[in-house]
Length: 451
Image (cartoon, rainbow, N blue to C red; front, side, top):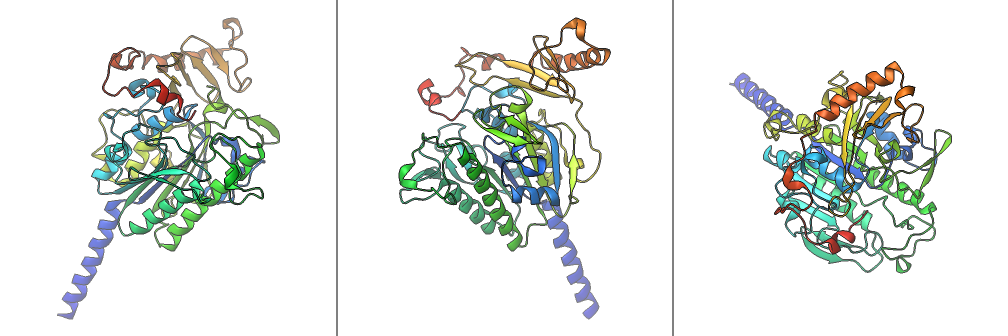
């Protein structure tokens, strides 16, 4: 009888372990706002203090070639849907309500889903829930109040204003910590698009000149406060990471951090012993190259550095694959992302040969579309301009046909084939002038959105 009891207990423990394994890891996805590759010390940055990001990189995997869209909303749409903007981007500040997001997929797989931070994807009160998030604490959902000192936030769609010197990023981080604490016993997905480090550049509560009474949303202080804001952002990430450890769930939590676009053009940083001017909004590397760090102690070996080409559309299939087969069954039929889960596991995976971008910053307001494909050495635009990224990383002068080497011509042919794959990818109903129920409200509202 005792043997049967022991056997039954053992089988029960095995079943519980199998269930835990099948349920997949907890997933925390953090997005820095206007935060380029050059800002992280582990990447070679020399202007700012990022000890927590550096520690996560040292204990996990740091990617050297992650590229996103040059502006926030275009990147967020790609990140959440796993599709290039050519397929589903309508204009700035909008995510079409017909889209399937990573929150939808993980929610169907049994994950508790939460979001905190910057929204900017539609002003409807029900937007977060509509897009798959059980809980939310957001800035710029139904309105656009201050985000830093004395902020206005929406808790599950309910507006709340703070007027006693509170600091928005700290309140958002408190929500994040509370969310993971309450859901520690079951798999959760937390999407954390931070408000930092977007301008206005202002003192933080850790700055010597912090005075919440003297700061409004549109006050741009000295550039030195970008450094303070970077340090504070890193501090918030460290506090969340520490809480995951205190809860005993850190080993089986996949934490990913990346930037939403390049650093603002008003910021010049020291990077690898040279001045590096931010390139937000531009289609050069300074506008698209962002940090990507992944930490998952149970899976990722410490100190890994990966040079594969990674796109923002790749995040969705990666975290869904990490969640397991149940989640993968819920993937939309057509996505552009390529999972890099194998790379996180230390395997070769399926590295990309090129990255593709369709970029239209304002769309209905500004019809300029820039479409291009690139690899590590060359970039080709739809209009035929070819750039040598090694010799001319800032794209000062396109290569004349007569000056193209054999290698350049070979690369051009490869990249042209990549562009041809998307020649007919843009749905006609998404073009300006076409009526769509997903087309957002009024230009007046859009102009109040963040840039």
